[in-house]
Length: 295
Length: 168
Image (cartoon, rainbow over all chains, first blue to last red):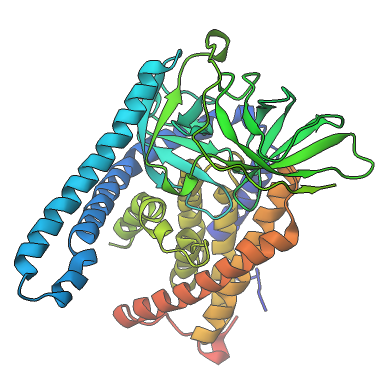
């Protein structure tokens, strides 16, 4: 049986403080949490060092894993050629890693040069510490010109939007998070809707006109109306259309073009959306999905 | 020494979770190290320490998370308070009790987070959340928490036991 009787003095004050804190945070409007963010800045600066150190350690471990541990079976297969094979494999692995990184960066750089708006390249250094949100931490922050509500993309398409910024870090809420909402446009029919995340890690476009002739396989792009994205950035392809009785709008499930589990580098769009005018980008090739329509 | 350990915990635990520990997922779910740490502090050091650690770690978790409602800032110290009170009101802190407590508190935490998400954002399917996040994470938290508690008990002196006659 839990008893509060033995709690005296400072302890009661702490419990009271906790209750006030909880109540204040529940009714605090989001726009008034500036002091919390200011206080958090110092903490994040302190924690940023271990974060970056741990990221370096992770890269080291990945490197060791891909260069040595993953190659142990080669050692078992051929003892006589062990040393030579290990050396060659190690070198090949290193070169492959470099080539892959180079390809990724070249692709990112090419895209960056081609885009009609300014972007900042950033690396993904961590992911959300809870199971409830789908977000990433990038290694660029306020000092680099990153601001809240800026859109984030990769060559595959839209990734998310910046929701928190510290001096050297920023938190990006992915478009597959349930709490994220951006305006989307079905490329073929030009119907606009709101794109939200789903629990399955896909996205969902809502409020499409009831008479829209949207089809499975249609490409959804950003509409440029809100959310820090220019018009025409690919989001994904429609995989299922839902028409419920007594509802005035259509909804459709979207399979995003971006592989959110493997994000390594991203571009943060810094140009205000009013000045950006993007021609519709081609969506990376993908086989047409089988027609499936639930009504 | 204790406070140095707390500072180290506050500064490094959330980065450790966000960078390294998130890779150790079971069916896409990872344990909440902050919840485990706060509960272990509550079990070992009492509710006051757990509240303070809960505020600091919850704040850090909110800073690095995509949420915008600062829910961990008050939820984690609340869990610390509950753990401390529950721990102080049992005479023998057994592993079974600790396992059940961690399981219950993790489910409670998940349920509160679910309610907040439903209240403040678009609706979330309760059964999907319970099956996909709340229950698997509670099991993961409870098992990992008890393993860590056992390790802590091996390297630190046992908690002061209240004789039955002097209880309350």
